[in-house]
Image (tube, rainbow, N blue to C red; front, top):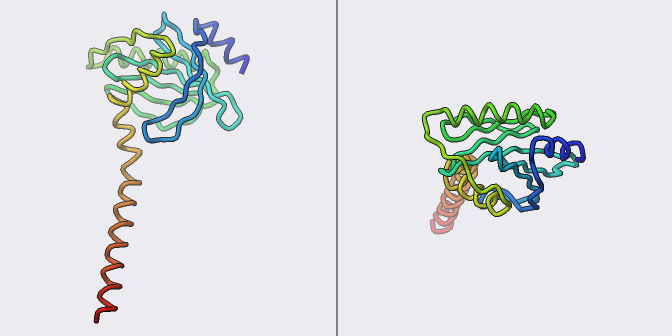
Length: 170
């Protein structure tokens, strides 16, 4: 963890504090939050599975965002959200890839406005803005199959109950 923190300090990140993060209606976890005002970027550190994991998060005022992690995660390459994982990369390599992705979003078809509040409260507000904006698609895609399974289970339960009632009436 010390090596990761040193590398973040070298890029201009300062420790902002700790927060609970996670998608709305999902399981939250604790993260240490670092911020680099000049870069308009947050670095979230967590100790999931016993290893220090880093996610760089550059939010924009309209709910757009770029997330780059040093672990494997499902990628996304939309006009308003870019997400990717580079397992086992050092902070410098992670930042280089993240910076390219931020430039890609900034130069894309949207006129994105950089997030201005690189504080702990700003990090919390940026997450809310992200999940109300571009991140909303991520929530829908995560929730589709569980919702479909629930509806199917309810339907089968209703049909089985109707069959049971018919058998006992006749």
